[in-house]
Structures are given as C-alpha cells and as structure tokens.
Image 1 (cartoon, one colour):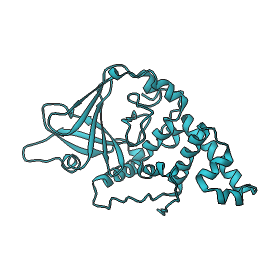
Image 2 (image 1 turned 180 degrees about the vertical axis):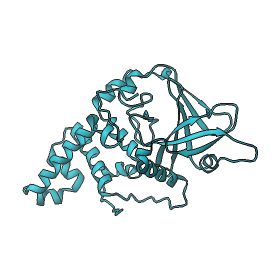
Image 3 (image 1 turned 135 degrees about the vertical axis):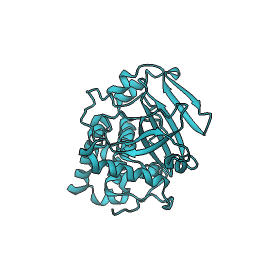
Image 4 (image 1 turned 45 degrees about the horizontal axis):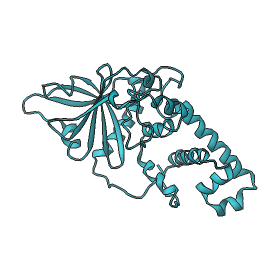
Amino acid sequence: MKTFTLETDAFTAKYDYLWRLSEDRWAWEYARRSNKVRRYAESRTPDDISEMQAPCASIRLLKSRVPQTMAERLGFAFMPDPAKNGFEADVVWTRLAYPDQVEVNCSSLRPGQTCDIWERTVPICNITHITDSIGREFLLIRGKGCVVQVRCTGLSLLGMEPVRMNLTISDLDAFERKVKAQKAALALIGDGPDLTEPRWTKRTAMLRNGLIALDCLEAGLNRREIAEVIFGKDRVAEDWNGPSLKHSMRYLILKAEALRDGGYLVELLGSQFGITKTAA
C-alpha cells in the first residue's frame, strides 16, 4: 500500500501519533468527540472500575464493578475517558460492536509447553487485562505506538492454572477480515523497524484531516480557516475560489461529522449496529 508523509506545523504535528492506530482506535478518536459519548461519560465515577497490578507480571488488571448498560449502548465494555486519545484510553469494544477483533482461546498449559504469545508480548509490550461486568476477558496490548484489543475465550487468564493462548477465528464468514486483523496485531511483536516518521495512506490521511476539522469546528473556525490549517494558507489562497477545494472541505466535514455521530460503528468497526442500538 502506498504511503506518504504530510507537511505539519506546531498544531497539526499533535496528530502525528494517529498514523499507527488500528481501525478500532480510529473509531475511538471519532467517538470521543461525540457529544453523546461525552454526555454518557459524565456518569463515570472512579469507583466504577477497580484497578490493580498483577502479582506475576507487569500487567494492569481492570474490572468493572457496576453494570455498564449505558456504555454497552455505544459498543463499549465499559465507558472510557474521552479526555484520553486512541493510544492512551482503555477502550474495549464489545464483540458485536467490533466483530473482527483478534481472538485467542486459552487452554491448559501442559508440562514442558510454552505460550508463544505470552513469551513474545510480555517482555516488550504494555499489557492491560480487562474483565467486563459479566466476566468476559479482554487484553489491550500496547507497543510501537499501536494498540491491539484481544478477546479471550476458554480458560480464564486469572485462574490458578497456567494457560496457553492460541489465535483463533470463530467466524468463517469473516475469515479474510479476521486474518487481516491478526496480521496487524503480529506487527507489534515482529522484527520490522520501529519507524518514527509518520507514514500515511490515503485513508488514514483523510481520517486525520477529519479529526482536525472537527477540532477546528469546535474551536469556532469556518471552512476556509479549517482548510488553511490542513492544507496551508498558500494553497487556500490559490485554490479557494475554484470548485475543487471548497467541495473537498465540505465533503471532509460532512464525512467527519457522520463518523463522529455514530458512523464509526459501521465504517470503522464493521458493526451492524447504529449508535441508537445496543451493541452488548
């Protein structure tokens, strides 16, 4: 896939971290700018989620103490903090909201066996284990500027018995999409270079520009001013009176607003649920 760099300034450089994010983290970036998500998040309290450190490894353990009905309406296992970005936030999507998430099945670890996933992630990644309000388990694995959500089935990772994690695909109808998600996850522990210069695709550049446009709208800028932020004053001065740039800005803003207002569920997560339906 063709990639390219983008010119930035002090303001737009703040969005450089986005280039490594997976589709579900892009979905959170749009969701956290939604007034509905922000309004629901106001009901969060520090006591809703317990947090502790695992005794056997440097792993955070999060567990929901209360029902998460409001969060599940938006596709979350529990309500994240909208102030945190796509890399920082502990965002866990439910299976119906995000059907293509990586899955592992946990089985007993027999004597002499090792767990490749454990051995290759724990030493180099930051791992958060999440238990939702009805006991389902997930992992958030962070590394190389990326976040991978993993849904765990089979034996509990918190049990007394050592387990072995195996990648699995439970939905053959979505085989190709799930394989793609697994390949992206494996890039976290691969031997590829840890690039620091943002490399964008046509799609991720559009998603980035959409987020910039939303933030500029919230700050009170008009379309021309937003175009100047994204494309530079020189290009806007040259092209604004023509039809192309104005049309592009109108489309970009409408698209970004649609993603923010619930479109992230379908277009970025592959869900069949809209924001008004429960995705538990």
